[in-house]
Length: 282
Image (cartoon, rainbow, N blue to C red; front, side, top):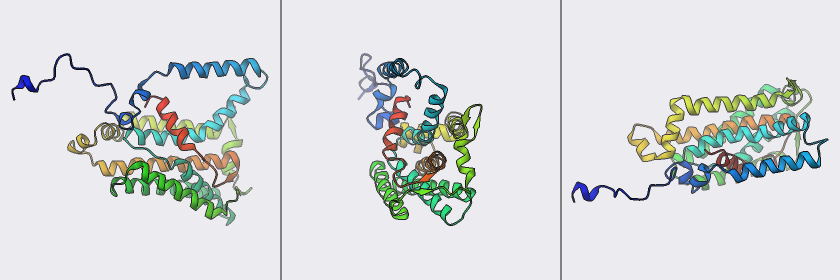
């Protein structure tokens, strides 16, 4: 076969942009790269309806602050999900892992452990769950959907077992955690600043570090990334550990906002996080 035979025809249809990227591998390439004019228009329309119908409640600073506080928990989870999806994976366990971390931390609170121990516990539980999922996917060769779905069931079940399906309260002497929700700086609760910090760090890591560049490489073409010298298995493991870390941080935020740890926390958060990543254009 000659070089002419091997060359692609000049009028060959171009490959859709992003078709080989991380969202393309999930079958969501076109969705991820669309401008979502309709969604933006719908959001603006909803805001207008809210302002017109309930001007005394909707268009107020207190309502905007409440929205930011509510969004902070799922927002932190979405940062971790962003890395996983860019890396060509998916994590269905984020909500359940957050619930498990909150239950484990509040269980320690009932045993007179302080807030620092609770925070460390939540972060470690989340990171550990992420590491386990990542190990099953990277080294156990399990499909990400199956591995994280199994983690969802296991984490939710363990949270229910530990709490006896009861809501556990953050003890009054653990005010350091509650202060994240009640203490305000420039009119915003501290948990909003925690969310903003996580977003900033995530953006810097993704766009200004070797880890971020490797994440794009692994998500775009794992085999090419391997041939380029990237340890794809190790990197995949780290991506899911990062997602678990974000779940642990989110558990601290939801404990601060609700003053509880519960096996029902984070129900269906995985769908919200995936939708946020896709609509965000990752």
